[in-house]
Amino acid sequence: MNLKINNESFLYDAYGLVQAFYQGEKPKVFLNKELPEGEESVEIRVEHDKISMECNGEYSGDIAIDEADRSDTKNRLKRLIYEVLSKKVQISLPWGTLTGIRPTKIPLKKLMAGETEAEVQRYMKETYLCSDEKISLATNIAKRELSVMGEIGDKYALYIGIPFCPSICLYCSFSSYPMGLYQKKSDAYLDALMKEIAFAGEHFKHRTLDTIYIGGGTPSSLSASQLDRLLLAVEEHLDLSALREFTVEAGRPDSITEDKLRVLANHNIDRISVNPQTMHQKTLDLIGRFHTVEQIRESFSLARQISDEAKAQGKKGFFINMDLIVGLPGESKEDVAKTLAEVKKMKPDNLTVHSLAIKRSSRLNIQWENYENELFVNSKDIMEMVHEAAKEMGMSPYYMYRQKQISGNLENIGFAPEGKECLYNIEIMEELCDIVALGAGSACKKVGRNAEGSTDLKIKVERCENVKDVDLYIQRIDEMIERKRQLYL
Image (cartoon, rainbow, N blue to C red; front, side):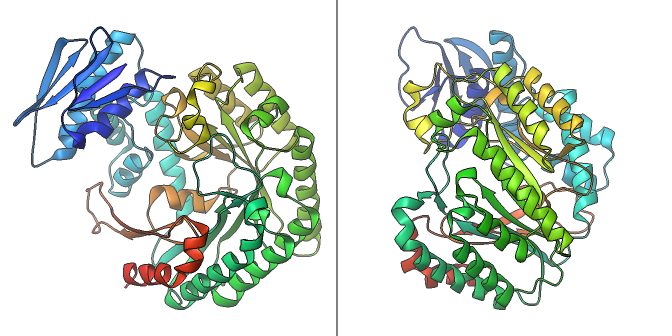
Protein backbone atom coordinates (compact mmCIF):
# COMPACT_ATOMS: atom_id res chain seq x y z
CA MET A 1 0.00 0.00 0.00
CA ASN A 2 1.22 3.51 -0.88
CA LEU A 3 0.22 6.77 0.77
CA LYS A 4 0.57 10.01 -1.17
CA ILE A 5 0.07 13.29 0.67
CA ASN A 6 0.95 16.89 -0.11
CA ASN A 7 0.93 18.30 3.43
CA GLU A 8 3.21 16.89 6.13
CA SER A 9 1.09 18.21 9.02
CA PHE A 10 -1.55 15.55 8.29
CA LEU A 11 0.92 12.73 7.53
CA TYR A 12 1.19 11.25 11.02
CA ASP A 13 -2.57 10.81 11.46
CA ALA A 14 -3.14 9.50 7.94
CA TYR A 15 -0.21 7.08 7.99
CA GLY A 16 -1.08 5.60 11.38
CA LEU A 17 -4.59 4.77 10.27
CA VAL A 18 -3.63 3.40 6.83
CA GLN A 19 -0.99 1.20 8.44
CA ALA A 20 -3.55 -0.10 10.96
CA PHE A 21 -5.67 -1.45 8.11
CA TYR A 22 -2.69 -3.13 6.47
CA GLN A 23 -1.14 -5.05 9.38
CA GLY A 24 2.16 -6.69 8.52
CA GLU A 25 2.92 -4.08 5.85
CA LYS A 26 4.84 -0.82 5.94
CA PRO A 27 3.03 1.65 3.66
CA LYS A 28 5.35 3.66 1.45
CA VAL A 29 4.97 7.42 1.80
CA PHE A 30 5.05 9.73 -1.20
CA LEU A 31 5.24 13.27 0.16
CA ASN A 32 4.68 15.60 -2.80
CA LYS A 33 5.86 12.83 -5.14
CA GLU A 34 4.12 10.96 -7.93
CA LEU A 35 2.72 7.51 -7.21
CA PRO A 36 3.87 4.47 -9.20
CA GLU A 37 1.24 3.24 -11.62
CA GLY A 38 -0.78 0.11 -10.96
CA GLU A 39 -0.15 -0.16 -7.21
CA GLU A 40 -2.68 0.14 -4.40
CA SER A 41 -2.69 3.66 -3.04
CA VAL A 42 -4.39 6.24 -0.88
CA GLU A 43 -3.95 9.87 -1.92
CA ILE A 44 -4.66 12.78 0.43
CA ARG A 45 -4.77 16.27 -1.11
CA VAL A 46 -4.82 19.26 1.23
CA GLU A 47 -6.15 22.35 -0.52
CA HIS A 48 -6.98 25.85 0.68
CA ASP A 49 -10.31 25.05 2.29
CA LYS A 50 -10.72 21.30 2.03
CA ILE A 51 -8.99 17.91 2.13
CA SER A 52 -9.92 15.32 -0.48
CA MET A 53 -9.14 11.62 -0.63
CA GLU A 54 -8.78 9.11 -3.43
CA CYS A 55 -8.31 5.35 -3.12
CA ASN A 56 -6.72 3.58 -6.09
CA GLY A 57 -7.34 6.65 -8.23
CA GLU A 58 -11.07 6.85 -7.51
CA TYR A 59 -12.64 9.79 -5.67
CA SER A 60 -13.55 8.85 -2.11
CA GLY A 61 -14.75 12.10 -0.55
CA ASP A 62 -13.62 15.33 1.04
CA ILE A 63 -13.91 17.35 4.24
CA ALA A 64 -13.81 21.06 4.97
CA ILE A 65 -10.79 22.46 6.84
CA ASP A 66 -11.57 24.26 10.08
CA GLU A 67 -8.56 26.49 10.72
CA ALA A 68 -9.89 27.32 14.19
CA ASP A 69 -10.02 23.66 15.23
CA ARG A 70 -7.21 21.64 13.70
CA SER A 71 -7.94 18.68 15.97
CA ASP A 72 -11.52 18.40 14.70
CA THR A 73 -10.27 18.57 11.10
CA LYS A 74 -7.87 15.69 11.74
CA ASN A 75 -10.61 13.64 13.40
CA ARG A 76 -12.92 14.13 10.42
CA LEU A 77 -10.14 13.22 7.99
CA LYS A 78 -9.45 10.02 9.91
CA ARG A 79 -13.15 9.14 9.89
CA LEU A 80 -13.17 9.58 6.10
CA ILE A 81 -10.10 7.32 5.73
CA TYR A 82 -11.67 4.80 8.09
CA GLU A 83 -14.98 4.67 6.22
CA VAL A 84 -13.24 4.09 2.89
CA LEU A 85 -10.65 1.52 4.00
CA SER A 86 -12.96 -0.47 6.29
CA LYS A 87 -15.21 -1.12 3.29
CA LYS A 88 -12.27 -1.86 1.02
CA VAL A 89 -10.50 -4.44 3.22
CA GLN A 90 -13.67 -5.61 4.99
CA ILE A 91 -12.43 -5.20 8.56
CA SER A 92 -13.18 -2.90 11.47
CA LEU A 93 -10.52 -1.69 13.90
CA PRO A 94 -11.17 -2.21 17.62
CA TRP A 95 -9.95 1.29 18.43
CA GLY A 96 -11.56 2.91 15.42
CA THR A 97 -9.65 6.00 14.31
CA LEU A 98 -7.68 6.33 17.54
CA THR A 99 -3.97 6.24 16.76
CA GLY A 100 -2.71 8.00 19.91
CA ILE A 101 -0.89 6.08 22.61
CA ARG A 102 -3.05 7.03 25.61
CA PRO A 103 -6.71 6.19 24.91
CA THR A 104 -7.63 6.15 28.61
CA LYS A 105 -6.84 9.87 28.86
CA ILE A 106 -10.09 10.61 27.03
CA PRO A 107 -12.50 8.98 29.51
CA LEU A 108 -10.26 9.94 32.45
CA LYS A 109 -10.39 13.68 31.76
CA LYS A 110 -14.08 13.60 30.95
CA LEU A 111 -14.90 11.72 34.15
CA MET A 112 -12.75 14.19 36.11
CA ALA A 113 -14.76 17.00 34.52
CA GLY A 114 -17.99 15.47 35.83
CA GLU A 115 -19.32 13.83 32.67
CA THR A 116 -21.27 10.58 32.96
CA GLU A 117 -20.12 7.23 31.62
CA ALA A 118 -22.89 7.41 29.01
CA GLU A 119 -21.55 10.78 27.80
CA VAL A 120 -18.03 9.39 27.62
CA GLN A 121 -19.16 6.37 25.65
CA ARG A 122 -21.18 8.46 23.20
CA TYR A 123 -18.22 10.80 22.61
CA MET A 124 -15.75 7.98 21.93
CA LYS A 125 -18.19 6.21 19.62
CA GLU A 126 -19.10 9.30 17.57
CA THR A 127 -15.65 10.93 17.49
CA TYR A 128 -13.35 7.93 17.12
CA LEU A 129 -15.63 5.05 16.01
CA CYS A 130 -14.28 2.86 18.83
CA SER A 131 -15.86 -0.52 19.48
CA ASP A 132 -18.14 -0.89 22.49
CA GLU A 133 -15.67 -3.39 23.97
CA LYS A 134 -12.73 -0.95 23.84
CA ILE A 135 -14.81 1.97 25.09
CA SER A 136 -15.83 -0.13 28.09
CA LEU A 137 -12.21 -1.24 28.68
CA ALA A 138 -10.87 2.32 28.57
CA THR A 139 -13.66 3.68 30.79
CA ASN A 140 -13.32 0.97 33.41
CA ILE A 141 -9.54 1.43 33.56
CA ALA A 142 -9.98 5.21 33.88
CA LYS A 143 -12.33 4.72 36.83
CA ARG A 144 -9.86 2.39 38.50
CA GLU A 145 -6.98 4.82 37.90
CA LEU A 146 -8.91 7.63 39.56
CA SER A 147 -9.59 5.50 42.62
CA VAL A 148 -5.94 4.40 42.87
CA MET A 149 -4.26 7.77 42.33
CA GLY A 150 -6.17 9.81 44.90
CA GLU A 151 -5.44 13.52 45.24
CA ILE A 152 -2.61 14.78 43.05
CA GLY A 153 -1.80 18.03 44.91
CA ASP A 154 1.90 18.91 44.71
CA LYS A 155 3.02 15.31 44.15
CA TYR A 156 5.68 14.35 41.65
CA ALA A 157 7.12 11.07 40.40
CA LEU A 158 10.82 10.37 39.93
CA TYR A 159 12.25 8.26 37.12
CA ILE A 160 15.88 7.11 37.18
CA GLY A 161 17.24 5.57 33.98
CA ILE A 162 19.97 2.93 33.83
CA PRO A 163 20.75 2.62 30.10
CA PHE A 164 22.67 -0.68 30.21
CA CYS A 165 21.53 -4.18 29.22
CA PRO A 166 23.15 -7.63 29.02
CA SER A 167 22.34 -7.52 25.27
CA ILE A 168 20.05 -5.50 23.02
CA CYS A 169 16.79 -7.26 22.12
CA LEU A 170 15.62 -7.48 18.51
CA TYR A 171 12.55 -5.28 19.08
CA CYS A 172 14.14 -2.73 21.44
CA SER A 173 14.19 0.99 20.64
CA PHE A 174 15.17 2.32 24.06
CA SER A 175 18.45 4.09 24.77
CA SER A 176 20.26 0.93 25.80
CA TYR A 177 23.91 -0.04 25.67
CA PRO A 178 25.42 -3.53 26.10
CA MET A 179 26.97 -3.70 29.55
CA GLY A 180 29.89 -5.77 28.29
CA LEU A 181 31.09 -2.82 26.21
CA TYR A 182 30.21 -0.12 28.75
CA GLN A 183 31.28 -1.78 32.02
CA LYS A 184 34.26 0.55 32.46
CA LYS A 185 32.00 3.61 32.05
CA SER A 186 29.28 2.49 34.45
CA ASP A 187 30.87 4.07 37.55
CA ALA A 188 31.40 7.37 35.73
CA TYR A 189 27.76 7.18 34.67
CA LEU A 190 26.69 6.70 38.29
CA ASP A 191 28.86 9.68 39.32
CA ALA A 192 26.96 11.90 36.89
CA LEU A 193 23.62 10.40 37.94
CA MET A 194 24.42 11.18 41.61
CA LYS A 195 24.72 14.86 40.69
CA GLU A 196 21.25 14.79 39.16
CA ILE A 197 19.82 12.98 42.19
CA ALA A 198 21.34 15.57 44.53
CA PHE A 199 19.90 18.37 42.40
CA ALA A 200 16.43 16.78 42.43
CA GLY A 201 16.52 16.37 46.19
CA GLU A 202 17.34 20.04 46.73
CA HIS A 203 15.18 21.53 44.00
CA PHE A 204 12.03 19.57 44.90
CA LYS A 205 12.46 19.45 48.68
CA HIS A 206 9.24 21.41 49.22
CA ARG A 207 7.17 18.99 47.14
CA THR A 208 5.88 15.48 47.87
CA LEU A 209 7.71 12.60 46.21
CA ASP A 210 4.99 10.05 45.42
CA THR A 211 6.70 7.27 43.47
CA ILE A 212 10.17 6.28 42.27
CA TYR A 213 10.77 4.07 39.25
CA ILE A 214 14.25 2.86 38.28
CA GLY A 215 14.07 1.61 34.71
CA GLY A 216 16.20 1.36 31.62
CA GLY A 217 17.71 -0.51 30.00
CA THR A 218 18.07 -3.10 32.70
CA PRO A 219 18.89 -1.64 36.14
CA SER A 220 20.10 -5.02 37.38
CA SER A 221 22.89 -4.84 34.79
CA LEU A 222 24.63 -2.88 37.55
CA SER A 223 26.58 -4.86 40.12
CA ALA A 224 25.21 -5.36 43.63
CA SER A 225 27.63 -2.75 45.01
CA GLN A 226 26.62 -0.27 42.31
CA LEU A 227 22.93 -0.81 43.05
CA ASP A 228 23.66 -0.29 46.74
CA ARG A 229 25.54 2.92 45.98
CA LEU A 230 22.68 4.21 43.82
CA LEU A 231 20.00 3.45 46.41
CA LEU A 232 22.06 4.99 49.22
CA ALA A 233 22.26 8.20 47.18
CA VAL A 234 18.49 8.19 46.71
CA GLU A 235 17.96 7.76 50.44
CA GLU A 236 20.53 10.45 51.28
CA HIS A 237 19.26 13.19 48.97
CA LEU A 238 15.51 12.61 48.65
CA ASP A 239 12.71 12.84 51.20
CA LEU A 240 11.08 9.41 51.11
CA SER A 241 8.74 9.98 54.07
CA ALA A 242 5.60 10.18 51.90
CA LEU A 243 6.75 7.73 49.21
CA ARG A 244 3.96 5.35 48.23
CA GLU A 245 5.94 3.12 45.90
CA PHE A 246 9.55 2.29 44.96
CA THR A 247 10.04 0.17 41.84
CA VAL A 248 13.20 -1.29 40.32
CA GLU A 249 12.68 -2.94 36.96
CA ALA A 250 15.14 -5.80 37.41
CA GLY A 251 13.95 -7.20 34.11
CA ARG A 252 16.31 -9.65 32.44
CA PRO A 253 16.71 -12.98 34.27
CA ASP A 254 20.34 -13.17 33.12
CA SER A 255 21.11 -10.04 35.15
CA ILE A 256 19.36 -11.11 38.37
CA THR A 257 21.48 -12.55 41.19
CA GLU A 258 20.89 -13.29 44.85
CA ASP A 259 23.17 -10.50 46.07
CA LYS A 260 21.41 -7.92 43.89
CA LEU A 261 17.98 -9.00 45.10
CA ARG A 262 19.15 -8.79 48.71
CA VAL A 263 20.39 -5.24 48.10
CA LEU A 264 16.92 -4.32 46.77
CA ALA A 265 15.19 -5.98 49.72
CA ASN A 266 17.47 -4.28 52.26
CA HIS A 267 16.58 -0.89 50.76
CA ASN A 268 12.84 -1.66 51.02
CA ILE A 269 12.21 -1.71 47.28
CA ASP A 270 8.61 -2.89 47.06
CA ARG A 271 8.20 -3.65 43.34
CA ILE A 272 10.42 -5.46 40.85
CA SER A 273 10.01 -7.07 37.43
CA VAL A 274 11.21 -10.43 36.16
CA ASN A 275 10.41 -10.14 32.47
CA PRO A 276 10.43 -13.27 30.30
CA GLN A 277 8.58 -11.79 27.24
CA THR A 278 8.05 -15.42 26.19
CA MET A 279 8.56 -18.88 27.67
CA HIS A 280 9.87 -20.39 24.42
CA GLN A 281 13.61 -20.94 24.12
CA LYS A 282 13.69 -20.70 20.33
CA THR A 283 12.11 -17.25 20.48
CA LEU A 284 14.39 -16.06 23.27
CA ASP A 285 17.40 -17.02 21.16
CA LEU A 286 15.98 -15.31 18.07
CA ILE A 287 15.24 -11.98 19.78
CA GLY A 288 18.65 -11.79 21.44
CA ARG A 289 17.80 -12.57 25.05
CA PHE A 290 20.72 -14.76 26.04
CA HIS A 291 19.11 -16.63 28.90
CA THR A 292 17.12 -19.82 29.20
CA VAL A 293 13.51 -20.50 30.08
CA GLU A 294 14.78 -22.29 33.17
CA GLN A 295 16.64 -19.13 34.24
CA ILE A 296 13.31 -17.29 34.16
CA ARG A 297 11.81 -19.78 36.58
CA GLU A 298 14.90 -19.74 38.81
CA SER A 299 15.07 -15.92 38.94
CA PHE A 300 11.39 -15.65 39.78
CA SER A 301 11.63 -18.31 42.49
CA LEU A 302 14.70 -16.63 43.99
CA ALA A 303 12.99 -13.22 44.00
CA ARG A 304 9.95 -14.70 45.74
CA GLN A 305 12.15 -16.44 48.32
CA ILE A 306 14.08 -13.27 49.16
CA SER A 307 10.86 -11.26 49.29
CA ASP A 308 9.38 -13.70 51.80
CA GLU A 309 12.54 -13.57 53.91
CA ALA A 310 12.48 -9.76 53.88
CA LYS A 311 8.86 -9.71 55.05
CA ALA A 312 9.73 -12.11 57.87
CA GLN A 313 12.37 -9.58 58.97
CA GLY A 314 9.85 -6.71 59.00
CA LYS A 315 10.82 -5.29 55.60
CA LYS A 316 8.41 -4.69 52.73
CA GLY A 317 9.30 -7.47 50.30
CA PHE A 318 8.46 -7.31 46.60
CA PHE A 319 5.43 -7.30 44.38
CA ILE A 320 6.78 -9.10 41.28
CA ASN A 321 5.63 -8.10 37.80
CA MET A 322 6.14 -10.12 34.63
CA ASP A 323 6.12 -8.68 31.08
CA LEU A 324 5.09 -10.64 28.00
CA ILE A 325 5.05 -9.71 24.29
CA VAL A 326 2.46 -11.03 21.84
CA GLY A 327 3.46 -11.16 18.17
CA LEU A 328 7.13 -12.10 18.46
CA PRO A 329 8.73 -13.59 15.33
CA GLY A 330 7.97 -17.26 14.80
CA GLU A 331 5.35 -17.53 17.53
CA SER A 332 1.72 -18.60 17.17
CA LYS A 333 -1.46 -18.33 19.20
CA GLU A 334 -0.68 -21.75 20.65
CA ASP A 335 2.76 -20.52 21.73
CA VAL A 336 1.17 -17.57 23.55
CA ALA A 337 -1.21 -19.99 25.30
CA LYS A 338 1.74 -22.11 26.47
CA THR A 339 3.57 -19.02 27.77
CA LEU A 340 0.49 -17.93 29.70
CA ALA A 341 0.16 -21.40 31.21
CA GLU A 342 3.79 -21.27 32.38
CA VAL A 343 3.33 -17.80 33.86
CA LYS A 344 0.22 -18.88 35.74
CA LYS A 345 2.27 -21.57 37.47
CA MET A 346 4.68 -18.92 38.80
CA LYS A 347 1.84 -16.69 40.08
CA PRO A 348 3.27 -13.17 39.61
CA ASP A 349 1.62 -10.25 41.42
CA ASN A 350 1.24 -8.18 38.24
CA LEU A 351 1.20 -9.07 34.55
CA THR A 352 1.87 -6.67 31.67
CA VAL A 353 1.13 -7.87 28.15
CA HIS A 354 2.46 -5.95 25.14
CA SER A 355 1.34 -6.25 21.53
CA LEU A 356 4.53 -6.14 19.49
CA ALA A 357 5.19 -2.73 17.94
CA ILE A 358 7.79 -2.30 15.20
CA LYS A 359 9.90 0.64 16.37
CA ARG A 360 11.87 2.62 13.81
CA SER A 361 15.26 2.30 15.53
CA SER A 362 14.92 -1.38 16.46
CA ARG A 363 16.88 -4.12 14.71
CA LEU A 364 13.51 -5.71 13.90
CA ASN A 365 12.62 -2.69 11.76
CA ILE A 366 16.07 -2.18 10.28
CA GLN A 367 16.27 -5.87 9.30
CA TRP A 368 12.57 -6.08 8.48
CA GLU A 369 12.97 -8.30 5.41
CA ASN A 370 14.48 -11.04 7.59
CA TYR A 371 11.44 -11.31 9.85
CA GLU A 372 8.34 -10.01 8.05
CA ASN A 373 7.15 -13.51 7.11
CA GLU A 374 7.57 -14.79 10.69
CA LEU A 375 5.43 -12.19 12.48
CA PHE A 376 1.81 -12.85 13.33
CA VAL A 377 -0.75 -10.17 14.02
CA ASN A 378 -2.24 -10.03 17.48
CA SER A 379 -5.98 -10.62 17.53
CA LYS A 380 -9.12 -10.24 19.59
CA ASP A 381 -9.05 -13.99 20.32
CA ILE A 382 -5.53 -13.79 21.73
CA MET A 383 -6.33 -10.78 23.90
CA GLU A 384 -9.41 -12.55 25.22
CA MET A 385 -7.13 -15.46 26.13
CA VAL A 386 -4.78 -13.02 27.91
CA HIS A 387 -7.67 -11.45 29.87
CA GLU A 388 -8.94 -14.89 30.87
CA ALA A 389 -5.49 -15.97 32.09
CA ALA A 390 -5.13 -12.77 34.12
CA LYS A 391 -8.60 -13.30 35.60
CA GLU A 392 -7.64 -16.83 36.64
CA MET A 393 -4.70 -15.27 38.52
CA GLY A 394 -7.05 -12.85 40.30
CA MET A 395 -6.05 -9.85 38.18
CA SER A 396 -7.97 -7.25 36.19
CA PRO A 397 -6.85 -4.37 33.91
CA TYR A 398 -5.57 -1.26 35.68
CA TYR A 399 -3.57 0.66 33.07
CA MET A 400 -3.15 0.65 29.33
CA TYR A 401 -1.33 2.32 26.48
CA ARG A 402 -0.79 1.89 22.77
CA GLN A 403 2.14 2.38 20.38
CA LYS A 404 2.71 3.28 16.77
CA GLN A 405 2.37 0.28 14.43
CA ILE A 406 1.07 -1.87 17.27
CA SER A 407 0.12 -5.42 16.35
CA GLY A 408 -3.57 -5.91 15.54
CA ASN A 409 -4.47 -2.28 16.33
CA LEU A 410 -4.74 -3.48 19.93
CA GLU A 411 -3.04 -2.34 23.15
CA ASN A 412 -0.49 -2.94 25.87
CA ILE A 413 -2.27 -3.65 29.11
CA GLY A 414 -1.32 -4.09 32.74
CA PHE A 415 -3.22 -6.45 35.05
CA ALA A 416 -3.16 -6.46 38.85
CA PRO A 417 -5.31 -7.50 41.80
CA GLU A 418 -6.90 -4.69 43.81
CA GLY A 419 -4.24 -2.99 45.91
CA LYS A 420 -1.27 -4.20 43.86
CA GLU A 421 -1.39 -1.67 41.01
CA CYS A 422 1.84 0.08 39.97
CA LEU A 423 1.16 3.77 40.61
CA TYR A 424 4.03 4.99 38.46
CA ASN A 425 2.60 3.21 35.41
CA ILE A 426 -0.58 5.21 35.83
CA GLU A 427 1.24 8.48 36.47
CA ILE A 428 3.50 8.25 33.42
CA MET A 429 0.62 7.34 31.10
CA GLU A 430 -2.04 9.76 32.27
CA GLU A 431 0.26 12.79 32.74
CA LEU A 432 -1.54 14.12 35.80
CA CYS A 433 1.58 14.90 37.83
CA ASP A 434 5.11 16.02 37.04
CA ILE A 435 7.59 13.33 36.07
CA VAL A 436 11.14 14.30 37.03
CA ALA A 437 13.40 12.07 34.94
CA LEU A 438 17.11 11.48 35.55
CA GLY A 439 19.72 9.62 33.52
CA ALA A 440 20.73 9.31 29.88
CA GLY A 441 17.83 9.35 27.44
CA SER A 442 15.23 10.25 30.07
CA ALA A 443 12.57 12.93 29.54
CA CYS A 444 10.98 15.17 32.18
CA LYS A 445 7.31 16.11 31.94
CA LYS A 446 6.00 19.26 33.59
CA VAL A 447 2.22 19.08 33.67
CA GLY A 448 0.03 22.18 33.47
CA ARG A 449 -3.37 21.29 34.90
CA ASN A 450 -6.73 22.51 33.64
CA ALA A 451 -8.60 25.05 35.72
CA GLU A 452 -11.01 23.44 38.18
CA GLY A 453 -14.27 22.56 36.48
CA SER A 454 -12.82 22.81 32.98
CA THR A 455 -14.09 20.32 30.39
CA ASP A 456 -11.09 20.92 28.10
CA LEU A 457 -9.37 17.59 27.46
CA LYS A 458 -6.05 19.19 26.64
CA ILE A 459 -3.38 19.32 29.32
CA LYS A 460 -0.26 21.33 28.66
CA VAL A 461 2.83 19.15 29.06
CA GLU A 462 6.26 20.74 28.79
CA ARG A 463 9.28 18.51 28.34
CA CYS A 464 13.02 18.56 28.59
CA GLU A 465 15.21 15.65 27.63
CA ASN A 466 18.61 14.37 28.61
CA VAL A 467 20.98 13.36 25.82
CA LYS A 468 20.81 9.66 25.00
CA ASP A 469 24.51 8.99 24.52
CA VAL A 470 26.17 7.81 27.74
CA ASP A 471 29.46 9.61 27.05
CA LEU A 472 27.70 12.89 26.24
CA TYR A 473 25.53 12.54 29.33
CA ILE A 474 28.61 12.19 31.53
CA GLN A 475 30.36 15.11 29.84
CA ARG A 476 27.33 17.43 29.83
CA ILE A 477 25.72 16.56 33.17
CA ASP A 478 25.74 20.17 34.36
CA GLU A 479 23.83 21.16 31.22
CA MET A 480 21.28 18.39 31.85
CA ILE A 481 20.73 19.71 35.37
CA GLU A 482 20.35 23.27 34.10
CA ARG A 483 17.67 22.12 31.64
CA LYS A 484 15.63 20.83 34.57
CA ARG A 485 16.24 23.96 36.60
CA GLN A 486 14.84 26.06 33.75
CA LEU A 487 11.85 23.77 33.19
CA TYR A 488 10.88 23.72 36.86
CA LEU A 489 11.46 27.40 37.72
